[in-house]
Length: 222
Image (cartoon, rainbow, N blue to C red; front, top):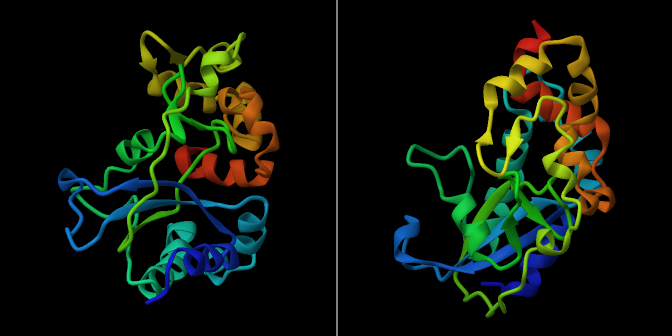
């Protein structure tokens, strides 16, 4: 069995990165033979560049990035004695959001989405890996949103779909994306996510955001 260093090298070889690492809890629904959970995120811009060349992106079948993630992460996890888990596994679905918020490395932004220092509001997970070794202790650190004076994520949405008080108005968002004015979000990515200052250095390509927006709002392709 190989250990943490080999795991990090294997992730890097797949243009992936460990975004968070948390101790396993009994309520996580993961076999107790494992000790911790690593949340796996794309390392941009390399992951998207690699993904565009992957056969899954060219075969015309549904969910190409999910299938690519399974192909990459399943053997990677097995190589270190771990177990690959994916957001689409379920029901019941793995508690990715709970894991993220437990990590002291990812927080809930004022407008309701997750935020990290490295990716801003573009933070996302391709998989998680249950690992046989313990997670190192993580000191509690404040959210970057606590020192963000203007909180532009709350005002950037053209239809005010995000609110610290009301949460996320999904219907308003989809309705806007059906209109001509919504094409900026469809082709560049969610305006609220783009407004986060931390996301500017995330390496995320606009065409990657457009890909995810088409998956989120598929009626745009009709």
